[in-house]
Length: 90
Image (cartoon, rainbow, N blue to C red; front, side, top):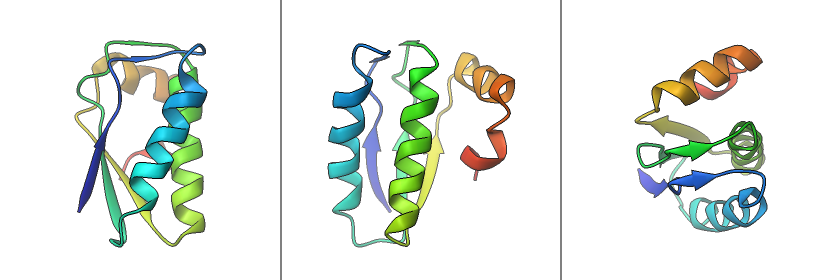
């Protein structure tokens, strides 16, 4: 399974660039499931959720599945608060 990692900071100021970088990295994988390591993510806002949803949507359009691992507790809580856990948890 191909792997990429979220940066340590993912906020409105960095979201677009991070999204584009991650899409390029993950889209190149020939594998059906691609892994995204969220363990390094320390500073983030709701833009992180938007990036994850964009990655998921882009990969699905290519017939691929996004698997997010090492969720920080705060990110899990934010995903739950926004009600998108079913979309992002494998």
